Image (cartoon, rainbow, N blue to C red; front, side, top):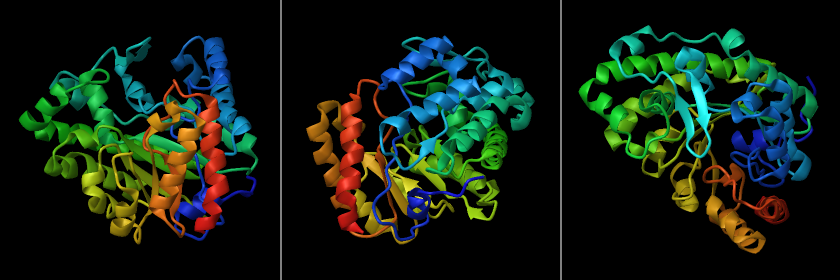
Length: 353
């Protein structure tokens, strides 16, 4: 495959010197882009879009045609794994993801098996391969998965949740059963990420969206321990190149040192974390990714420029920073704000290197 022309992201994730701070955006192929909405309308639904490698490749590349981003991230969803386990994923307009067969009985959890990515998640791997080919080495491609605990939340709750009543009840009443589920999920995530790497992903990210809802001891036992297991099982080298791994727990600022010790190359920070403090705490061990509040972009290009400048200043001089938002870009964001963000990072960051 083509050698990388722009390896700034990979170098930053490995804390190697870079000429500027690389930038990409979580959910960068999404509903804030009119061209994405047009392709999604052609597909008929979100799931039809995600499961069609040609269309998924098209939307993965759309933000790169518009903005000078330093990475592509494969267009998919974290819930493809439980869908491949037979839970029956669907998306209800205005409500988000729902599973037709959520895990409500011990028997269902005991019957779960690890899906074969080559067979049951072939469409994602085909998308990864097509995107990697289309990029032709211009920028690196990021593959991703949900964390074992975050996947378990959706699988037990049946969809998104405000209070996580069912998963937390399971955690406290039957920790043995939850551990069994997390063990299966860990093996599934390892197989899935390794298959993405073999198909062309040059960095991987684990999204722990709901780990931050746990207490400190529970986070370590039920979320971080299983992400650590994933990191131990994921290929960190492919075709003679290092494959960096990013770990992102939304709401994880209280556990930065424990996350940095997990074996990841980079820690993703949400907007509640103090970037400068995080750097002084763990920046000698791992790279940091983040962490502009996505809401800043809603206030327009000027506010976005100010916000981006403040994040760069908070990290300060030196390498090991990947600029990103503290969570996914809002569908209500004007593309002009994203353009201002990317331009500002490229314009101002060389002074810090």
